[in-house]
Length: 163
Image (cartoon, rainbow, N blue to C red):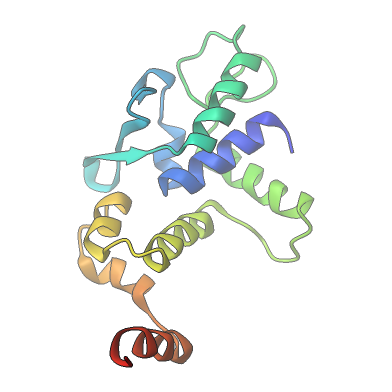
């Protein structure tokens, strides 16, 4: 896995951004101290997303490696003239990472977005906060992540209702 691939993966997982949002991020959009940035989502709506410490570490490492490249885009191609990575290029890169990791199935950015939301929910983040993080206008879209299986219901029943 290259530094750019790792930075892309960590950024995607950390922020839960849509691939189109990632393609439009510029380096100076990131507030490194607050570990956050504003992205423009669907319907041209702006929202704040956050980068965790691991994403920050790999992004800084990646940016240091590409310091000679004069392009405001956060992610750029490896070959000159080092243009901004577009949606399709990001999708291909994520799929390539999945293949390198030995996955049989196709891996795509939206799958990582789902993973971020699912882990956030399982860790106790409220559906309202997840909705905000993902930029869902309709709570029903976020509700999809709340689909629980029988075992989850059993565990919560034991935790909350059996003394």
